[in-house]
Image (tube, rainbow over all chains, first blue to last red):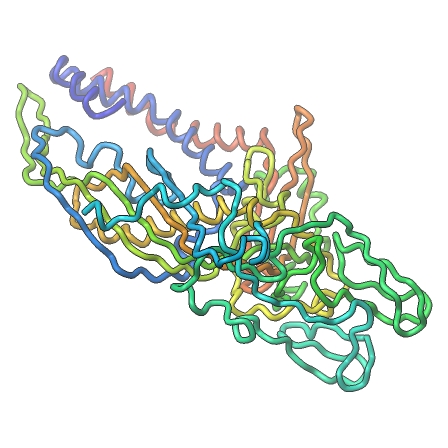
Length: 119
Length: 410
């Protein structure tokens, strides 16, 4: 149950609604706790989410940073605390559009084969 | 702004047939396969001195250390000037699947065979000399470098035992009964170490909150936010040093529903800056897994990891957008890359488990043979897991449900 649904319930039923809402939460609590405990225990034993955190451990130097920040418009009466689709804090999650190119480098006068052959 | 950005059409996409510049970095030794003797007394009884980077002769106790590839071949230098692919001898494309290599023993003339899929040394059955593979092979069995074990078996057993002991309560009973840390084995696994000269451009939309206000609707209220929206572009060069990528297909599959390869992946990184030129004497009788992936097979993985690395590096730069940034486009140009291969030391405890559907999962508990970092997958008993889940749920119900009834009756 999200916050807005809860607000609708409260709005529609007044004081009685408050009590009903608390009772509903208390009834649901064991199921939520059970689900969460199951998930956490399985995770602790199987560690399926663990991986090499290369983005934190690989040495990398950043140079020639250029920034463009262009104001587009003002948005009003937004309901969410954060921008919709926020993904800048999840660097391992790819953006909708990804373009990954490998530059060929400056080829010498000979062919790639003379440089050691195409890999 | 657009004129300053690289043209996307000027570079081929990763995965296309690679026809660009390849610069070879020679890491061959020129040595013949066969006897690899102590430089002081000529004995072939050479082994790795535990806990060090040294080799030691069993006869005269002479000690020496292999040369660091960073020093001899400048790996780690000049990343900003990399162009095309720079490929060491050990990372060259495999053009042979022949694993059995026959060597002539220089001691007695006998022919001795080594199965390079798992080992790089063999003892001559006639004169007892140890014969080694002393230079690169076209089948990918010999890497450029090796990082010797610095963690002893006792230390590895302690770490594995602790890891499993902390998870015994819900573990599969058969696993608990069978578990013996003594069964841990040493293995050298093949990896590629990649440097990248990269150019990245990130596009997105960012929002800065300008106002927060609450509106009353009868007895309830709603909080609203106003925000300024910006088009955000960041463009930068990135010079990445020593990204590690799996180069064994069986260990590069991270479909975690059927394999626990992510466990071995999770004990990375290793201090690859310290890798020394490959010498079979570091391996001795320790088993290895042969590289079976070429650069073309792992390039996409490596470059995608570079992209993630770039995203992580630029992340703090979005701090002013207090409502966050939605990245819409990621672009990366790999201007140049440098590839080397290495054997990395892993202590591995494995346990095969067949589930009710007959599906086999091999669980690993792995220990980084250098840092001691430990990770594992412990088979879990479904009945115990559900029992514990029920216990948590019932405990909560004991507290929550009386409250619920009391509230309804009030």
